[in-house]
Image 1: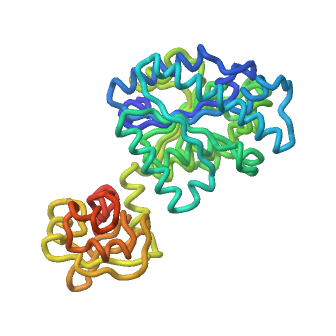
Image 2 (image 1 turned 45 degrees about the horizontal axis):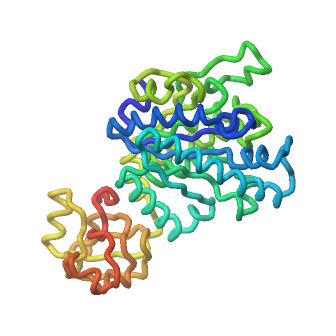
Amino acid sequence: MSLLSSARRIVVKVGSSLVTNEGRGVDAEAIANWSRQLAALAGQGRELVMVSSGAIAEGMKRLGWATRPKELHELQAAAAVGQMGLAQMYESQLSAHGLASAQVLLTHADLADRERYLNARSTLLTLLAHRVLPVINENDTVVNDEIKFGDNDTLGALVANLVEADALVILTDQRGLYSADPRKQPDARFIADAQAGDPELERMAGGAGSSLGRGGMLTKILAAKRAAGSGAGTVIAWGREPDVLLRLAAGEAIGTALHAATPKLAARKQWMVDHLQLRGAVRVDAGAATKLRDEGKSLLPIGVTEVQGDFSRGDVIAVQAADGQELARGLANYSAAEVRLIARRPSAEFESVLGYAAEPELIHRDNLVLR
């Protein structure tokens, strides 16, 4: 049974050699093929995010460069030129198959900073809610170390964490993971199933692959390990396998499946349980305590009676009963200063008090774990 058969939210990452047909320019046929499959999956009610390499390779082709430059400013120039063609091709092909799309350029710094992380998350989840398929690439034109050290396998895993995906699919120019590089050792053993994070996988993984991309099989193994941290399994498969996404979603075993040891929701809630650096707490009235404990509801600001600490949006905070006993903990949608303004108020008043309308919940039930 494929990891994708029951996955509702899927991140698909494609590499440079596939997107640009080994550097000959953006491959319209390949992108049209993936777009057709993505449209079919969207028709099944699945939510999809595409993480695509290829901007630098496409820029090299447009600039007439036969080999990848080493100077960062030239790599950045190639990315700027290539991004135009890459975005245009995805937009036209996805549109031809009835899918709206959006271009999102991210850096690792965007996902390391709490506020920018939450803003990126909100944007992507809003796009998915509106049935828009985000096409994500690293913003290589402005950040030096993203080109020098970055790779889109890692970005794919970070995006899977960001949107709490059920599965990450890494499409590459290899059938999957082998015990050794099959191009050098013909007797290398194919690995169909394994657990993400197994140290043996890192030992077996080879070095960099093509001259166009920056990631080899090791980066894919490490990406799967990172994705598993939020409960997402990873499939590594050949990108030109006929109907690869549709067949995976139908339950067919293709490529290498790297399973997460902990399911998605359990992984998220265990992280919150284990979170030691609580930034603050709120106390709630008896009615809110009952709804949390007995009815599995979200925490609304109207039930908050007291705010402790100086937490920010996205921090893990404790939820306490009137006697101070910890009932739960979870991710705050508002800062402590904002909660002090909207405590005991219904959500209809938030905009007039804060100057903007945001989430009605202080902590959504999906981001809350009972103690």
